[in-house]
Amino acid sequence: MIDVSVLYSGLETPSTPHRYGRKITQIDPPEFQRMAVAKSAKERKPIVVWNLTRTCNLKCVHCYTASDACKYPDELTTDQCKEVLRDLAEYKVPAVLFSGGEPLVRPDLFELAEFGRSLGLHVVLSTNGTLITKETAQKFKDLGFAYIGISLDSAIPSVHDDFRGMVGAFERTMRGFRHCVEVGQKVGLRLTLTRHTCGDLDRLFDFIEKEGIDRACFYHLCPAGRGKELGALSPEIARQAVDTIITRSADFVNRGKRIEILTVDNACDGPYMYLRMLKENHPRAQQVLDMLAWNGGARYSSGVGIADIDFFGNVHADQFSMFRTFGNVKQRKFSEIWQDTSDPIMAGLKDRLKLLEGRCGTCRFKTVCGGSLRARAEVTTGNPWAPDPACYLTDEEIAGEPVAPLATTAAAPSASA
Image (tube, rainbow, N blue to C red; front, side, top):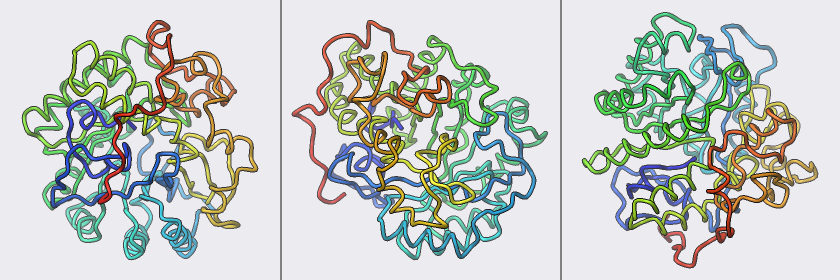
């Protein structure tokens, strides 16, 4: 996850110390629910993506779980989920992200969220937004959800409806956004970058500002589930999309708008941003390289700083790696499974740089990017250590002397974080 608004424009956010080991400023706005930070990125506990159910009221073309509007057997019960939440709290994970399917179809969602909050967990929700009423939005606010992420594929209703497999999905999703904004619940937009969505990004940024949306995450596609049917972006289109995201994010910050913009699941976005900043003689280019190096990109992501628990209790390196399971929370605690490196893939994910092959293995930004998304490499090639096919940096850009793991000017984590 690359926080564009933080890195390029210096916007302080609640997650900055967790992601980059430091704060941009020394003043915490009073509304911050700041995430905890480890002494190093390698020591971070994982943010846990938890697919509470596979059932969904939509049928999206890029759904990595290939969910549908039906009942799936053997999903975790309420009591089993509470046992998992106890373990996650004791293990001190920085956040739990309830996802699906569509998590709002689970009748015990708010019971689980309330229980998690009582344990001190930082709770986030990922939803398609179509089931959010004003009463639902108020429950989010009352229970202290840190953030509600709502998926939107386009500012054009017909395009979104086509992606979601339901006529009228756009209008229902927009009602969900507006209900959250009305009650003061932090809400963000989530969009997957595809050939269909990249051409409409400027219009989407206008839409984000108009609707008062606090945050937007732009996901690079991983060909999992139904997403296997969508073609990959060309390097040229990917670069154009990231440039638009950087430029429009900077415009928000320059105009005093606290809108957080991130890109997700392609860690080469970090080096690409740094190279752009060098060309622009950006005064914070070195600081950004230091922060990226501390973060490590994907080096400390899947299998380290990101985990997934699926609907049946299986534990995966991330939500796109459901083809491999390291254990099940019905038999063993998540914390035990996560720290068990007897599986060579889990051990490799926790110390991956020496295993990376091809362009990723020789890239000068290897310690900054970390080889990007291993799930995409394995799904595409069958080899978990192959180059990530979504890297859009040129051979010339990645050649040369390796970037040091951490520049001497990098700051230590703030004591108050």
